[in-house]
Length: 487
Image (cartoon, rainbow, N blue to C red; front, side, top):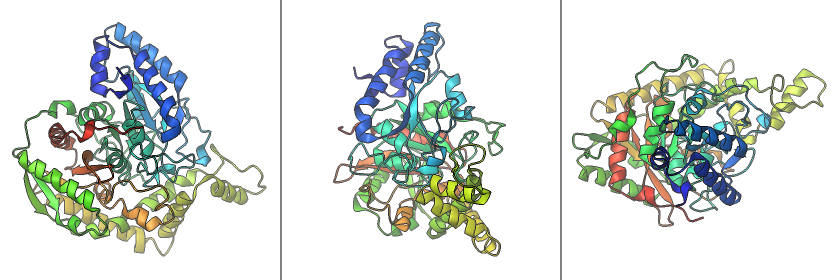
């Protein structure tokens, strides 16, 4: 048995029955990382010693008869969540050697469940990117085609799950950074409702948009991870004190009868939609209809402004959040400069990559005197209209379905020097972050080149349970999630 191929729920059953040990499972995953990392480059830090120590502890817990659904399960963590004693870089040179003195809330919850952390995964620097090419450390490659991008910014986590280099992973989603790489790598990825999962200890990009979520091999695993990480946290002022149900209780194969699915008419008008993506999504919608769902047209009239609004709001918030990286308290510092302003300028110029610098400059400009009202204030007003669009749409449907990305994974280097084209690759995912609603990406097909394609299912605020139910039923009627890349 190749243990690294197991899902979370499969591994949990074997661990509970003492048919395998966490030591064996973790060793198998670490060996898999060793054998494939040179090809995929999914990890920034592999925590061999820590992982094995946690596995040994998990085995003692299991032998005592106390086991949770994540006990002894090897997981990967996107490298922007603070891990006490374990390097957290945000894939940036400015934090290359930063070791946090505390755990983020989600990490604390994983440790409380005796999960095993095998390492920190690669990403676009400070989560700013859609391809993983903006990492300050390395470029992660798509396990399905090593010449192509895995998606971003959680590309390392998605690639690690796809290549069986972990059993499950956490990522973050500011404008599609979980759902888009999940689609490109053929795995399941969820962006929860804003405020559902604590952001305490998450290195901030855009505070009104960021949300942590799971990337997994199937929908069941996604629900299991959400059960652990979701919930109110007084340490996060944006956390919402909303009850968290057992998401696995909604994973019942009972069809979709009574569910109304909205199909946004504006998304049919998007230029550059790849025919393979369009056909896969249409097939998925037909499958949903065959399973009992009623599909209706809905309108999201302000969709044409989504990219413009996002790329004002997100850079503005990034400009404010990244001001703290100045070389004074922690992180990289240019020690050769003799004046404070020279040190600031040189530290930030050397420490930040080109995409991060671009967004800081855009955000600083939009927030500057004389331009705030014209840019940030106006974008915030249009954001409210986008939120109203979804509110109105959900009056006539329970879920909304759309593509995740306009194309399958594109070749490395194809768009990296064309920021606008790169930004447009997130056209279907940005709106969920602006509206704060939950969304999930589920494998729904393959391109003519054999590349994975995902479908996006969006729901009302704090209605992740309906997303899980629909995604699970769709998954049970298809086998796209069972296919694996050949490395």
